[in-house]
Picture (cartoon, rainbow over the protein chains, first blue to last red):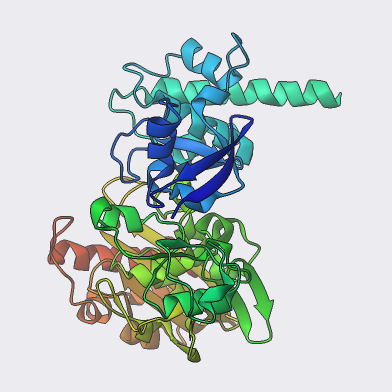
Length: 165
Length: 289
């Protein structure tokens, strides 16, 4: 039996036919759609390298049954930049050295975008660390990551203020 | 995929079904399909190639998600995600459950994993169980044959074992209107994204400066999380200022039958349990441990 899955991925609506309903979202993104930004680190929900947004919420795509997501909107790291212009979180990661080898970075950035969207983190570095705790960095770039999230969040808040002023 | 013909039993069972109604879900469960929701435990606990047989996805079933107040107390739908529990407006007695919700894996897990999955997978380290035990939670079970209800304490029967019968699914957790304030503490190798070494939940209702009611539970120590009746009886009636000092190993440890495993030895777990319980009591009675 073939299962047809309607997804909006990085803004583009797609109908995807699945022969095997057991495929994870991560395998679908990487193997079928060639969106290799989300990484397969541990493949069991312990490292966060596969983090993507589903309807704006952060999830581990390695633990997600793709077929159950019919009708949702998915954002991956490939969907953040607008042309040559990086997303403010991407820009902040570069400015604050929020990475070393880069393997965990797509997951870190998607998690940070999710965290800022949740609007709960505030300006307390400890709360940022807690909010980012689902993403492991073996290089230990945590200090730069927290700085980048704080900076990106401030950029967003400035933007909101300017718009509403 | 959303076939009504499962109700008549005529359709061949597909490898994956995501029904909209509970009636359909129960008909499909009755034919041996494996229920799933957030999948956060299913994938790590199952060898991918071994994820065989039909899958019953409960995430589309109407009425299985969300927290509502009923005339029998609070009803938490089985497919309610932990992130919803963490952010829900609930009375202070649920503070322990809400704190536990924020410790289930990390936010990526809390956005997917469900309350019902946590209970049905019946891990000895399931973060949801101790706080729900202190709330005297009951579980609502349904099958094509009918519905029944039982205490959560009877539902979890062992590591990865529950009282669910063949073809039965957990539909909701029922919490009778609870009094007092709750709290939860988890001890792990790091502060988040970790499986508990020991966790403890407590709820105390204070009246006239004394402990009117105390409910305490410890998880991740024994095959199944336990309540601590000896401690609860010892605390009842005490002036709040004396409660934390009354916590001693003899009131906690015998109830645990603490286990040794790769995360910790039994002796360490026993000692850590007493410390966590004392901190909970101190916090809930306004003192410092």
